[in-house]
Image (cartoon, rainbow, N blue to C red):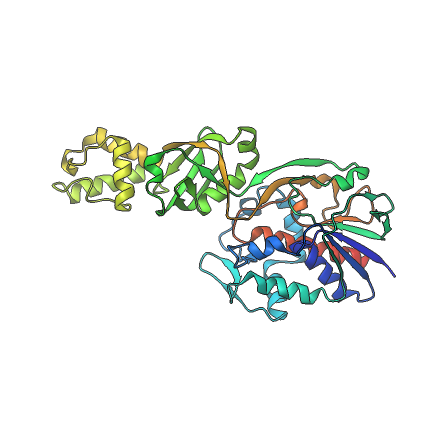
Length: 390
């Protein structure tokens, strides 16, 4: 009987185990998990609701969703797409719903429905909890126990995967991704709770993202911030998480914003600049203060210099970034096993036949919105199919 070891009982590992057991019931599948429960991170994802995939609507290129690993994801998604994910889980009795932000969730809004579904599908799998693997030796001895193949699905593995040292793999040092920004500006943080559609970037770099921006009591969060943290993950790590964040509060160019302000001035010449505005009142007052505009100034008195100051603040409002905070309890890393180690079609090691990788242990990571879990499902499917064909 062929024996397969899967290292890590996260989303990728458990899905791969379920697929193998369904396709080859005679296959002996053992999953090793260091923690006391399987799929602990999966149970927390999406705020405990489990954003298990995305519709990919509006994604112009995979690079937008996968800052690292888009080439491998192009192949993996052809093998197992987001539509396949929806069909698989609904076929297992978990009804799903597509939200307006293009994210798929269980109708129940309970991540445990996904966890329980995978546990049922893993019937017959030898799941060994509280078993951190210490070493895998060539010939596939897992802590001295022989296997015919090994699939590594240990996730972002911020502590590394030293148990694979004997295989001398090329690694990309892992750094955090998907985090919020600590902004030491009391005036900005006093607006905590406000949400605005905006774009954010890092001054002096090409890194930029757009979407909903949430002001918090420590700085900036929301989808736009999380996208930017993903795109600039390695740059920010190298900079010690110190940079200048530029916010375009209207997500428009200077000419468009100037035209908007001129229209407001023409339509409301006698009204106070502070009382007629394109943003929430508290945010507008904050931005007028940053532009040096008196609260008693009327639109007819603003003039070209005042207009230019407001345009500058609305399109490039700069704040110091001084550190990061984790996004809820979801830890995502950029880095891992370098993609040059693996065959892109099978996710098998080029040098060590029978050694496979799936999920975030590879140098693949994505922006928020279900894309990271889709990478887990797709790469796990590729590994399972490769093992079945082997």
